[in-house]
Amino acid sequence: MSISTFDPDLSHALNQELKREQSGLEMIPSENFVSEEVLEALGSIGTNKYSEGYPGARYYSGCEWVDVIENLARDRAKQLFGVTHANVQPASGCAANIAAMFALLNPGDTLMGMNLFYGGHMTHGLPVNFSGRYYKSIQYTSTKEGYLDFEQMMSLALEHKPKLIIVGATAYPRLIDWQKAREVADAVGAFLMADIAHIAGLIISGDHPSPVGIVDVITTTTHKTLRGPRGAMILCNGNPSTPLKNVDVTKENIPTLVDRAIIPGIQGGPHNHQTAAIAVALKEALQPDFKEYGHQIVKNAKALAAELMARGFDLVTGGTDNHLMVVDLTNKNVSGKHAAVALDRAGITVNKNTVPFEPRSPFDPSGIRLGTPALTTRGMKEEDMKQIAAWIDEVITHHSDDQKLESIKEQVKNMTDRFPLYQMLKY
Ligand code: DSN
Image (cartoon, rainbow, N blue to C red):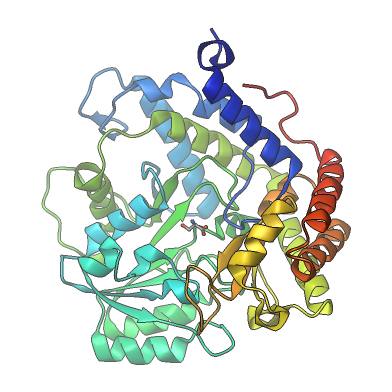
């Protein structure tokens, strides 16, 4: 029996979501469209099996094929990023970050990360997140222009002596200088963690410098620019030791500490269907055309940014080097929340976002965040970005004009029809 026969309510919701994805412009920079091969693995029988532990050392019987699946994912991750150890079990980016902190810190230890409202992430020490409640959290911000402020990081580090420094962002449009972050960490003997969730695909394509060999531990999601299923990985160098030996918290022991942080530290049974889908996505990322994909994401982002700026939009840092941009709408007299709602009604999905030194509330901030990974997956190029910038401009100018928004939605639909997505899918 199919979902449509057994559960028409769910089938309807899935088909409507499919239609929404097909007929709109998906510009949330952390979203993407996986291949049908990744979807096939994600919907596989891998979900049926319990397999706590790691390949060759499980707590359950019957794991011989799950071991093969997990080893495929681990080996491909190691090859892609040039590391000797990969843990592919974190269920999500938050879980990967929790595990990395659980591995390296004791409750009450000091960590330092980028403030969410300047482009960081809630797991980088936001006071209301576990990372800000169970550890002493020091938050760095940015320069007035929105760039990473390594001088401020250094002075905060010297003052507070964090045991762990986290570098990585969810709304940072420029390249990250890992070496400068290393200098800060070395000045106080801190562990250095890179959260590359947003830029993992760009690191693979060579469009963003890699932190490998510079930082001590790397976390990433698998579903953003990497274009895999929802999931995450922790990458590092070295090799895990036997599971039962006691290990000190040292750089050499990071692979063991990370593996133990995932299980038994914070997770139970791995999601083997998810691991299978990660393996497929990593195989896709190993193909030569993935590099082209990464290059095109950045070309598209630069083209979109240039056209928006030509139309009087104010971009944080004055542009982008990667897959995203943060637009400060203060000079357009509309809030980020209202802009996001109007754009959504016109078939353009973005998210409201704070800007550095935000004068408004995070719930109704001054900006929006736009990205090109999903549009690039659909095959769109620089000239399409020009058209999209023109629609964004029109929507922002006429954000309360229902007819105008409806007419742009129709034009967006016509454009997306030229870039087919999941044509054979139906639930
Ligand atoms: N939710 C992700 C993003 O949109 O960037 C961060 O976890």
